[in-house]
Image: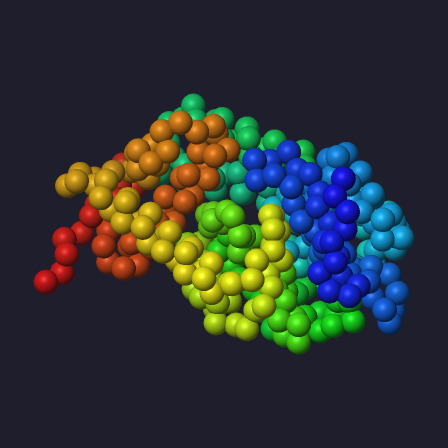
Length: 334
């Protein structure tokens, strides 16, 4: 197993395996020189392989799970929080996250069913055939095998300060890839724990998510994501340590590449219309003709994000026909 990697004094990266196509996940362990104990930033999926790798990494640092006092969950995806409930039960650790993540992390049966129903409706109005909707539904329900519900004991809001490894880190709420995603920034060392907001080798997929409980308006993930990338690019960052893959240094160059990628993808989608009205499903099939249910759900999410970006620019519009939304290219304004 990979050895812990020092990020800063008393702050280390551990690499844990996942069963997902994205590959291993990076988690971060911070010693608290003043109060003792550890803070764990993310914790991997609930698998025996991830737990064994976490135990081995902590042992290499002279610690165990019982030394963990706080768990910071950067966002509510199973590869980042799956082990949190088990670790908190064994160690008594606090669990801290952005408030938007609470409904998912603490999901009741009603909340879980609300989310599943939202995605089924989203796929239906996107024109996805019932057979594929059923396969995606089974896949999403299966994700519950990799995470337990966990009680959140404290909130991390944008602008809060969190002490890690004897340093004050700023909490940056950066919705896009996930509505509740938060990065951590240490201004003295100019270090960013970017988790899945920015990855060196992968363009993070801004995922469509249900509106928060009690509301009806969902976030436009890609539109928000581009704004949050530009926010981080304006900051003084010397090194970014992500949730997957290798660290990187030129954040501004990476953001330029990502923004250009999304602009080019939007232009490609715009070129598919050729005078016709299309559903989100039809566009996704043209872009990604052969995908398994997991990746096809990601494709639908990505296409919808680009359509909403084009809609915000006045270049496409949507119309409801029966139970399906169709998209049209709008004529260029003189």
